[in-house]
View 1 (cartoon, helix red, strand yellow):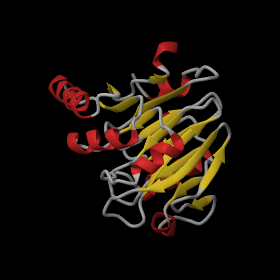
View 2 (cartoon, rainbow, N blue to C red; view 1 turned 45 degrees about the vertical axis):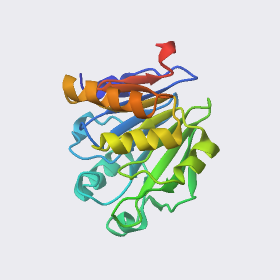
View 3 (cartoon, rainbow, N blue to C red; view 1 turned 135 degrees about the vertical axis):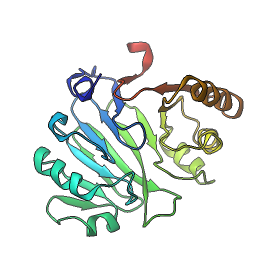
View 4 (cartoon, rainbow, N blue to C red; view 1 turned 90 degrees about the vertical axis):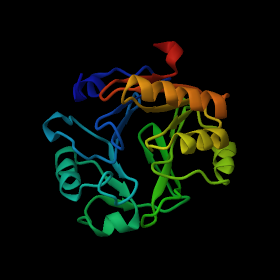
Length: 224
């Protein structure tokens, strides 16, 4: 499997697809009309066919590689959507600075910037809302916080995209956001079993799915 899996994947009109490209923060989300690349680190530029937006959640090195982002934007011509701090460290052409509460429309997606409780400079979480009615909550490296209930009430997320390393935090966020499914990255069978066990115990309303690097996950699953 490789990058071509997600770029060539034909997303049905009412669906959404996603894939990890670096087994941690880097995620590609694809709808029938748009491709979003989140936090590209360790990306092979020759395999990134296109993007409609490049989104950087915060400036930590496992989420933001300034040189790579510049090269990726040069290749794809996609706008960079990011925090004020990250924007200040990039050329000003085709960059949109976002703050909590802002949103932008990217083809068939509304991208909503949300609070992220993480020790960085004005970090952001995101809600990805598609025209077909799918809502994905991408909290980035955020810790759980009580106001996530308000996010859940407003957007009613179908998918929680968890890129952190804490099982406890994943369960707490799921318990606050009430997603239909929690998606995280697969490392090994023992970690997968533990992740599913903890989520089933602490957030029983949500299903759990761990995907491998470059594996394409499609939501809703019953349409596969």
